[in-house]
Amino acid sequence: TNHSNHKCYSMHESIKAIAEDMAKRKTEAFAPLYDEFNSFISEEEIVAESSGPPFPFDKCMVMMLTGEIADMAESIQNTLYERWNIEEYIAENMPLHLIRAKMVEKASEVLLDHDFCTRRVVALGPIEATRRHVSDLIDLRRAHSHHKESSGDLDINIVDAIQEGSACIIDEVIRQSHDSPKSVNVAICLSTMGEGLIKARQPRDASQRLDEAASLYRELLGQGHIDVARAVNAVAKSLVKIGETRAALIRFGEASSTYEDCNASHHFDSIANLQGMANLFVTSGDFQAATALYENVISRKQSVHGEFSVATAKTINDYAVILAKNGRMDDALARYEKARSTYEQALDGLPPSMSWLNHGESAAKCGFDMALINLNIASIKSKKGDVGGAINSYEIGVQGLRKYKEELELAGDDAGKNKNSSHMRHLVSALGRIGSLKLKQGDKNGALEAYASLFKEVDNNESPVASRLEKAKAHIKCATIYRQSGEREDNKHAIIHLREALNMYTDLYGTKHKDTVAVATSLQQWMEEEHHHS
Image 1 (cartoon, rainbow, N blue to C red):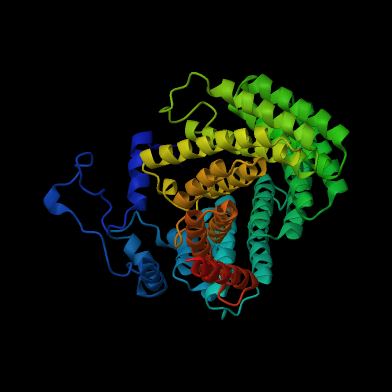
Image 2: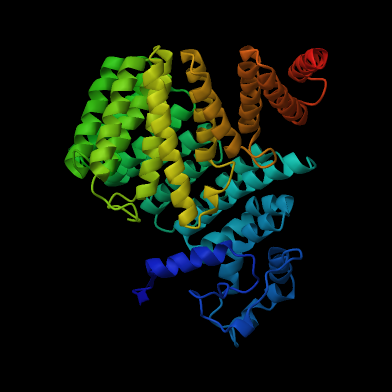
């Protein structure tokens, strides 16, 4: 739909779901695979999934846009393709095609080229040109990192490339600012570039750009404007990244005062600013100031979203995480329990099938968050010596993780079966802790049951190294439990578990690693004793 030269694209949720499904498919056609639900095409017209190499789309586009078609752009636009502005397309997408085509060095040259930056600003306008340039520089860094790991033959100083590329587009935006180099457009571009540089891991350059943007906003809009507050908050966050704690606290305070002056104290950005300042007080050791600020943040979240809302629960949980990281275990435990009860009341009465709540979080994701809270509670109780309480919290957390896994699988999400997913890693770790704590209680059968559950969750090929190591250690613990009974039949079980542990350690570390050698030595000794007794 077109309104006053602004293009507004809207897509119904069901169409979005189809689009997401299409994006995951391997077929070369855009239509979904034929089944009883997707009957957009006849069964005879199905395009089979491609088994060969993917079509080199981006390389072809680069060749087209840098060859004859680029030279013919003006004549083409006057004929059949008059609606396709090729210059605009090149300005917007050329670097992206180069990066996706693995032509990283060429992409770097283009992003640092003054003529290209000029064309980009002319074709897209200053704000969109800066946004695209930021996105391309971030993609360039990722591609450089990936290419360096795989082949290591790139002749690019990525830090210099990002610095020069960001300076190039900003200089061009300022040069083309016909009214004045001090305009809101320039401020927006500086701010956009600063936030992009943070993502590109250039926090010092980011801080400089964001400070320039904040000064320009203040000069153009006055001190008491919400965009000034946002800009100063961005500066504060960049200062945190480079370890300038005192300067960051001053900027957070300045942003907070500006939000108050704008009567925007309950605005999302204002609350986030206060929370950032509270986090910084915790990490700097000023727990009194942090507590007062967090209570303020939680109070504002409650007034905006409700006392028993997911947004409130998440904030309380964030506070608990920060307290735990800084060794305030008693305070952290109280906050985790408060967060859990707030989540429970927020979700009380909602059907499990409900996809999205009014706060934008899926019900399933909230269940996952609650499972992690239970695991954190269990960890603190374990450190405090409350073994029974820790086991109970771990078991509740495991139930929550399994429920989340089932909901993902029912929704057709591949993450449900992915052994490398975060919920699977947490599940394996929690089962290992349950086994260890039950051993501590003297409940050997309970420990064996926990380890047996762990074995089912870990795949020797697909699971991450940490999970496989957890499984190998569990086999050793099972072997030890059976060995200590002294029964001949149990000795056989002990040898089976130790042999499995040896196989896993060998796969993980090789035959000469000290842990592999230790397991192999014990196994050899146990087998000799078993042979002697037989």
